[in-house]
Image 1 (cartoon, rainbow, N blue to C red):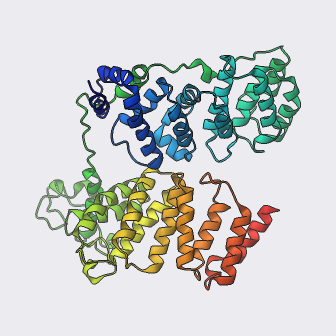
Image 2: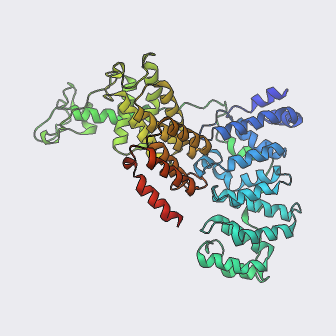
Image 3: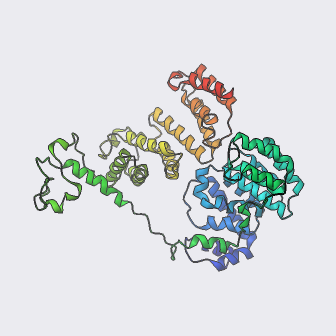
Length: 508
């Protein structure tokens, strides 16, 4: 089996383990390694996307099993992604498996692991896992004990942020295992200040362990040993289809509730009691009530809505109207599903000459919206409202916003700027803060007298920095707002004075 054939065998999501392909890849590792590293690179670039094949998951384990030096920096880059992206990519692997990827591939590059431990922008469980791996390397004799003792003291004294998180507990656990008596005053301060979690390990137990009177056993994560790729992948492939062909998801059930709602709102008013089962249905269909509207009830005169819903023109219109229905009852996940079904068809049905969603050619295409630009903004608002808590919103947004901006170069400038700002926040949610900053800087250069670009970029560098795992730069945020106050004509619309005052207090 050639390397190309073996790598191809890793693509299907099949419950059959590709044993021969894995064997061939190990035997031809120099040829296979670049392809598998490219899988990791693609995931770093597209952390929000669904896996196009199973090869990425195999790449994670194979690179660790083969102790690929080049994979180490990729693992570090993946581990620095915002928490929602980590959950999307690794799931439960974050706390157990990912740290062992570091240990297998670091080859003495301990500074990389230390930098991860100290990076306050990163997920606290990833940071704690990196520290656990440093301790494992100490026990294996690959990292000097005295150097680790000094590092633990540095962490406790100055290198950890002064707030509760799991990294404090991991650092205290390391000092406990190493029995560093000099660390006791620092550990007491951590408990007194509330930075350490007494539910994880009580101060008394830590003191006893360090003094030699208690249990100084290693953290639970060390009980796990990374197995072969076959052993590790066996856990995942059990739920995959035998033929590797996953059934496409069927969203059609989402159209039922909106259709029933429209049907109910269009029925004729009836005075008195509910019709009998065998009476003609009040909706006017000509069917018996039991064969028609009995499941959704009937309507009295006083219950009749003032605005009767207009039916959809086609299937795409059904999806558009269904999304609006679910958004109206705060079922945002279903609303996103519906509008995600509608979006490609809306694009396909537009005349090629349309460059502006407010073009007259866009009106009257569907009953689900009066103007296409209004619906595009509705979709954008739904994405924006849930970008921090829904990977689904991120996935749709990273497809939706670039496509809209590219498809409609002549769209209203205000809407276009709003979409650019939303896309910048999405990029930050995906760990692409540099791309987001560059996007907003271009907005400032293109519209120097509009405060939006300055304000959004300043927020990302200050108030929103922690949310998106960005290192705050309060000075730069203040400079942006000060510059906007001098240049922008709509400074009051963006409350630049108040933002600047809040930053002054924050910095103090």
